[in-house]
Amino acid sequence: MSKNVLVLGEAREGELRNVSFETIAAAKTISEGGTVTAVLLGDSVENLAQEMVQYGADRVVTVEHPHLKQYTSDAYSQAFMAVYEQEKPDAIVLGHTAMGKDLSPKLASKLSSGLISDVTKIEGEGDAAEFIRPIYSGKAFEKVQSKGGLLFITIRPNNIEPLAKDESRSGDVSSLTVDITNLRSVIANVVRKSTEGVDLSEAKVIIAGGRGVKSEDGFKPLEELAHLLGGAVGASRGACDADYCDYSLQIGQTGKVVTPDLYIAVGISGAIQHMAGMSNSKVIVAINKDPEANIFKVADYGIVGDLFEVVPMMIEEVKKLKGSPAV
Amino acid sequence: MNIYALVKRTFDTEEKIVVKNGAIQEDGAEFIINPYDEYAVEEAIQVRDEHGGEVTVLSLGGEDAEKQLRTALAMGADKAVLINTEDDLEEMDEFSAAKIISEYLKDKDADLIIAGNVAIDGGSGQVGPRVAELLGINYVTTITDLKIDGTSATLVRDVEGDSETIETSLPLLVTAQQGLNEPRYPSLPGIMKAKKKPLEELELDDLDLDEDDVEAKTKTIDIFMPPEKAAGRVLEGDISDQVSELVNLLNKEAKVI
Ligand SMILES: Cc1cc2nc3c(=O)[nH]c(=O)nc-3n(C[C@H](O)[C@H](O)[C@H](O)COP(=O)(O)OP(=O)(O)OC[C@H]3O[C@@H](n4cnc5c(N)ncnc54)[C@H](O)[C@@H]3O)c2cc1C
Ligand SMILES: Cc1cc2nc3c(=O)[nH]c(=O)nc-3n(C[C@H](O)[C@H](O)[C@H](O)COP(=O)(O)OP(=O)(O)OC[C@H]3O[C@@H](n4cnc5c(N)ncnc54)[C@H](O)[C@@H]3O)c2cc1C
Image (cartoon, rainbow over all chains, first blue to last red; front, top):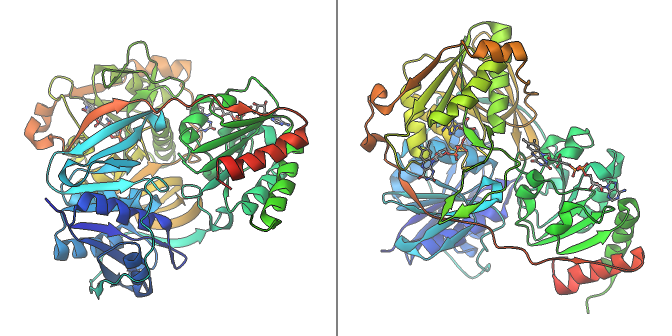
């Protein structure tokens, strides 16, 4: 049976995040020919609608309201529920981002529905779809199915391939007016700490430093390398505990769980709690002076050496590579 | 102030996971309080010490969760409640868990409920917000700071690395993120005292719930291990040669840069 699916696009500083396009791809798999409708919420989002269509959405519904400028669960749930009531979809797909994690359980609770969180892979299509998600922070996986009723999932960024962008696609864009009231939380202030806007959970390349990096200054070359590769900097808990960097960078079982294309672990021993957060990365590089370090067990490529020597050399090599004309 | 902390019993983070016949093997494994729930218990104790009141720790699970509740009591919580579903439920999901927990809490007039932001086993992060919604109270997730003044609360929330300062009011449910506090270790006198603190045990019947009310909406059909990674390559030669080989491999072979 074909399904009508609602996805929620997510913008950051006025641009759609990649995970938005991934939700469309996931929705297509679930819909089996049904309609995929993208929802955009914000104070000014109309201009983003076309891009959702180009990535495969059949229709877009926007809700614009000054209270939607910044995410709060009250405002966003009111707006999303209004679209839900209008569309009565069979399924919903959100990104498993800070926003998706905060919003989806509230919506699922309002809808008395199940919610399959943090899906990394979908097997089968339509009613037969099965959802794979990591458990024990990636030490194992489970395959989950909905028992019927509304199907609601969140997908982990960077795991489900978006469809190719097609600029010739067109789709209907409509807007819905929603009265947003009774907001219980007020955002008084936001301090941006994330490096250069590349979010860890979505970064294709992560350069992670551990206690071996030895100081806050020691992270500077890692930042330079990350910048050159368009990636983000992460850290082990060892580095965070030692105050070399902020806890928000911590990767692992009690930090972020990441799956970039390339993960470079610099001066990280590879404790089980750290590996839980990164071992499903596509390509792993370890740089460590101890040949016995555990991290080499999951590394695709390893260099046994002093990071203070290796990282600057890598920066030079990458500069050479990036500077050289394409072959 | 009437404070509740939600505590889940989970595998020790040191444990390797073993899957047999599509199920996680628990034999011989060490169990702990979910690390984020330790922050929740610690915060609850600190809020009580500053503003007065009582901390109740609540766990849903089997008989075995008593140990984690005793640990929370030894840290300084006043009372514990175990909702034991062992005999009633074969299957459960986040919907069921939140429904049972909120059914218990609905007439308790909690001012503040603190949960972990995610359980490191199930990993859905759903239970906190679901419970708040079922109770009709506001929630703030992944907090790294909490200040309470009368019925107002000011919180700092970690949002993918950025911090948001949020102003809201009680009653409130919050979920703890790393950085919120440093959980204390139970002291010896604490452990002695914990043995005498009240630990109430309830079943679904006591909550006027039957199995149908909490029937899971989703079903786990398989559990499996991640694919084994083939052994990697440790490069050899001069460091500078290794580095240029690495960059070349990442570019040409792995195609990731
Ligand atoms: C409940 C719990 C939860 C935890 N959660 C997490 C988590 O989420 N994430 C996490 O990361 N950890 C976590 N930990 C901590 C984890 O057990 C380790 O202590 C931590 O990962 C170690 O960090 P590290 O590898 O940076 O430090 P270390 O283990 O000290 O390793 C430093 C490494 O750097 C290498 N090194 C030193 N100098 C150089 C140099 N000049 N050049 C090259 N290499 C060098 C050393 O050989 C060593 O291998 C948790 C622990 C517990 C108990
Ligand atoms: C008897 C029993 C049978 C189960 N059967 C199944 C099954 O068949 N299939 C399956 O997939 N799962 C099963 N579970 C697991 C259960 O469904 C999940 O653990 C539950 O839905 C919570 O989800 P989570 O682990 O993702 O927690 P999260 O939502 O990630 O937890 C967030 C926070 O909520 C609070 N919290 C979560 N769970 C509890 C709890 N139990 N007690 C107190 N506080 C809590 C904690 O503060 C925690 O930090 C079973 C659990 C029990 C107790």
